[in-house]
Structures are given as C-alpha cells and as structure tokens.
Length: 152
Image (cartoon, rainbow, N blue to C red):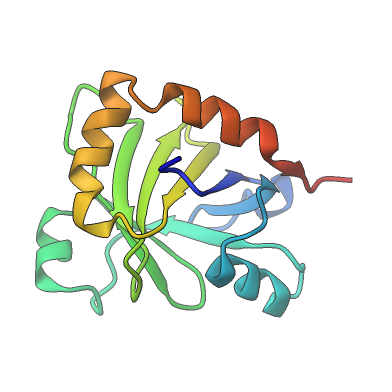
C-alpha cells in the first residue's frame, strides 16, 4: 500500500467563527507520529490544523505556486491544487519529512481528508495524478475503513 495514514478533519461548530478555518480530526488511523505528537500536546488532545494563506516562512517556490497551506503551531504543508477543474483535490508534503500528502475537500470546504504516503515526497505529483485517474480508489476506501472514530 502506498497510503499509510489517514486523517478525517472537519470544521467544528465551536470554531466556526474563527477568522482562519480550523479543522479538527474526527477520525484517523492514529499512527502518523508528527500528527499524534501535535494531538498529545494540544489542549483538546486531538490533531487540528488551520487551512489558510501561505505563511511568509514558506519557501519562495511554495509561496509562488501553492494555493493554500495547512498549519498548526507550525507549518505543516503547502496545498497545491494543480487542476482548476478539480479544485477539491490537492497535494503537498509534510515539512521536514519525506512524506507526501493528498488532500480531498468537500464542496463546502467543511471537510478535509488527509492521506499520507510515507516516503513518497519525491513522487507527490505522480501520486496526485494517480488519485485523479482513480488508481488509488481501493487504497482510499480501505484506509477510510481502518480509521478510528474519535468523536464521542
């Protein structure tokens, strides 16, 4: 399997008034070390991130080409959305790792799914193309089924 980790993120009602959209994890495979560490250190004891503009600390390439970014207390990833006809799908990489990320958003941008492919940073564009062709559909279905619901 190429996709190793999954995080299902939603905009919770209690943070709906935030200026920057905040997404909280409601289901995950719970095994990606960076996200699990961030969850353990958070007040709410779950991974969350913000979907916002590109921070100044991102590289020039990222600031010029990325549409958005996901951040928490630190930068996590740029979000590249290369196909204007498919704006609900994107890709990036986890800063400081060799891991690629695939993003799927709901039409209202209240849901963000994060699929991580450990070690695939150099192939992130190819992974995005595979997702767009449907080559990863079986893996995506399988990893969604293995996610643990974190809501009570």
